[in-house]
Length: 104
Image 1 (tube, rainbow, N blue to C red):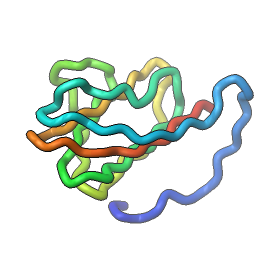
Image 2: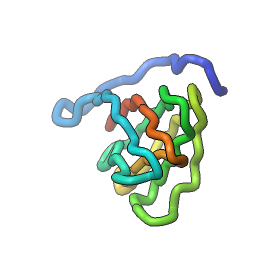
Image 3: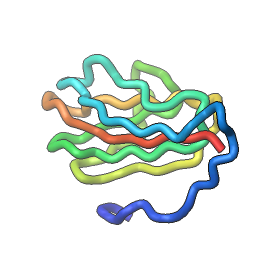
Image 4: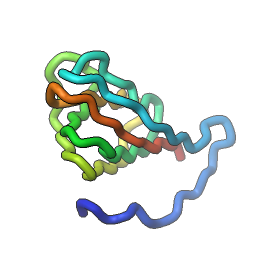
């Protein structure tokens, strides 16, 4: 659901890989993609800016951005630990994201 809060519980079972949360600014025109997650099993990304963001789960910095989230939209998924999740702006305008990753 777009524009609904993420709810539920997360049982943290690994003491060496904590829950991680951060914000990042995605540069205009997709320059300098931001690595959001690697070696994790869960990812949540929320677009807090005014421009669309695109996400790649393959870690390919070229053209594998298959997920697009607009302003105030979010993406949540369980992922394989081999996945590398990267995000970049989809337009000529910079945008800001917040993200949460975990391994469990």
